[in-house]
Length: 355
Image (tube, rainbow, N blue to C red):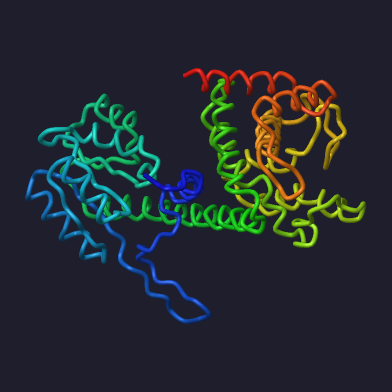
């Protein structure tokens, strides 16, 4: 078990899906010089030796590296050790079927982005529907035709390459956010705690899966814009001057601008921009009021304030849970936070403490 759960959570956020891919077959250039990449790896899972030999011969002739497995457990071991870029999976195998293996892989965040082409001699439409429901990305019917095989493999590997590059970019942004956090030695995994608190509150509110993921990411990325704030302001142990405060208030907009080009972070942008708005409209940067403040931003506000109150800083002691609840309820009544979400958050904490 990791010795630091908060840091482990931070790493898990941007390592799921392998954001730093190394296996790309296409040759590229760097500064005008060719850049050689390792051959892409394809895992063939089939218990019929003639099919395995045929696929190995066809795929290696096109420069792919081929790894084989004859059943589900062997395939899982190969996925762990070989990290394939694509899987060709037979439907009918001894033990667990291809449908079952596909469903398991697609339900695992660390492996769900590996493209899977299911190979089947079955022609019934219901069999294809079962494959789609299991998460298969494409199908090939037996007998296999080489040009169809190559076309489908090329198409999915290109999509996988784009996905890996996107994950890589997200990983860089998360690393940048953690670098901002590291500039302040007193935060102590603040981002990881916010990611956890916010996602748990989101679940308690019954939010959908995409919103939960946005809250997890928002916990890490909400203060990304502080990368532009000078240390003299960010680490100042006393009150900021009006000019310094003006600079500090720019960080939500800057963070939004950094993440805006990433389509996958679109749902996180309102969290980044609006997590310093106040329920009564006195916050920044846009002075939004009440439910005009996006819900996910209001969720993050509540957990952010709680974490700040319960964390010691050079200029203040950490408040107890009871003191923090009293403070937040008083501030909610004064118009700072959404009163309903404050109620929901402390109800969640009481429920967890009683469990």
